[in-house]
Image (tube, rainbow, N blue to C red):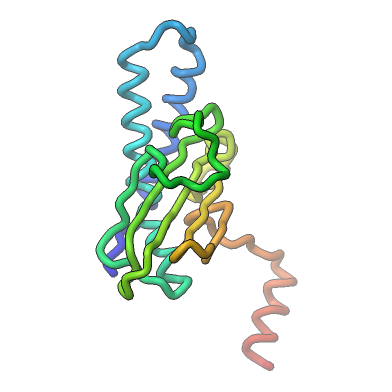
Length: 172
């Protein structure tokens, strides 16, 4: 499938999302600073770049490999799910939402919606490249996955639990 790693893009995405949020939250509602608008557009584009490969891998793990690449945007599709309010936009106070569409190798329609949470991104420990948020994938209208993190490492059990687990797998 040839999906590239997004590990190096994740820290940059966090930086841009945080900066866009900070700048947007400081500007008065009546004034729109062109630099803030440009920074928000850059953060949205980077969000798409970071989320697309993770979404493609998630579909493949669920047995639905994507034909080509997903087409993604921060603009909701015309036929967006009814759970989205008409007034919602891509850059909300708590995150950026990315919408992707495409097809599986078998021709089934796929949809992905991922919302990166700025607050959760900012709260991650140093060195954690996981992307916390809400991520949902559907194939022909049926949900095939729902996650709260992309690229997240599994929680490591304490040493004693890990040794028992390893012994159980190896020794029987």
